[in-house]
Image (cartoon, rainbow, N blue to C red):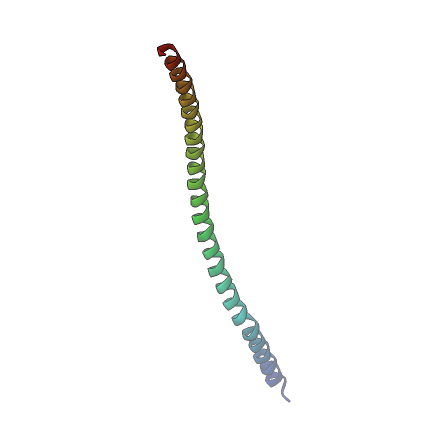
Length: 89
């Protein structure tokens, strides 16, 4: 066989091997990139939801403290009303 033919067959085999390896890897990289972008979008959404939930929790804590103060005020007014009733009798 002629050395130029042999070199041509080696080159064709090498390029075929590259196609067999590179094309599937390019597809894998593409699909992985799409998945990573989806995860980043989901992460951004979750971070916004967590921030909103933190605000809601702070508001709930403030509301809880306000309710406790109102309950103590009501108990104090009940005590005052009972003393007033005792004085009126």
